[in-house]
Length: 168
Image (cartoon, rainbow, N blue to C red):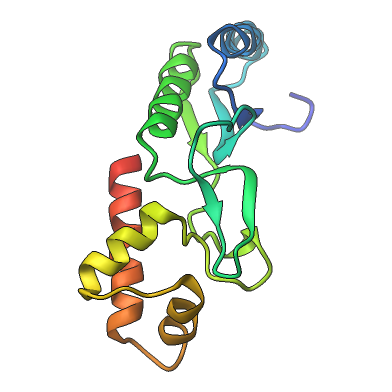
């Protein structure tokens, strides 16, 4: 409070699949919210990464057009991962924070050099359905990122739009 701030953000970090671990962290946040309010903070928030899960085994993880696959950044098209994300938001909303913030890593572009991310099987199935043809992730990157708007970029954006709508 010495900083003359009215807002404090508790950085939770990564998504937690394990309900017990998530509950332990949520309880610490709940107690910190009480302390922060008593110390005069008007707004409190819990923040965590949108797609980073500490226990990502069994989830579809982000894949780049060169074949790189993240060990722990999950694809929002995976329904199991979306359930964990929803559980995180619910559990941390119950701590008494005024806001639950998710990191703005919706671009994917910072996940792996300059490669096209996400090109996992779930994303590529949506892209191919929109295009009406099969295409490899490498071909998609080349065609989608060449020139201005085109059907390949539109198909990739369509897949991402569905991923974000489903995640929300």
